Length: 149
Ligand SMILES: Nc1ncnc2c1ncn2[C@@H]1O[C@H](COP(=O)(O)OP(=O)(O)OP(=O)(O)O)[C@@H](O)[C@H]1O
Ligand SMILES: [Mg+2]
Image 1 (cartoon, rainbow, N blue to C red):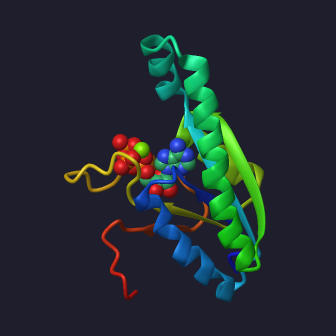
Image 2 (cartoon, rainbow, N blue to C red):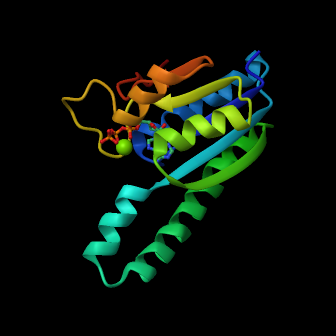
């Protein structure tokens, strides 16, 4: 049923909570996971204005992203999924919607929150936008999720 999964991640703790549930989707017929990380163009702009070490910092960032991606990929491969990795630069929400359409995914799995994880916020802005605009089923993993679920 949920053959092709899109998992957009910022590698935050809140977003990594989704991994466990993606694995369980195997039982619902999932075969392939697209792991998508979007380098936020707004953050790059701020960085380029604030630091004269922009190139070194972005090179380091790319390295870290590759490592984080490889770690999630390994978990999925161990579970028997086919895996595709995508790193894009742009607006996270826009890139997520574009990937969902281009790849014709059957479900999107996101964390309720991400890196900012502000206590007072009911949802992060990326997950809120994805929920508002998705045209496929969504699984939103709460940051409050209990260990035993
Ligand atoms: N840059 C990104 N690339 C891919 N997926 C992302 C990215 N940012 C967020 N996501 C996805 O959206 C989920 C919610 O994150 P979101 O950014 O909305 O929350 P936040 O960081 O707590 O709040 P905000 O970004 O609005 O300050 C994450 O768990 C992840 O699944
Ligand atoms: Mg965020």
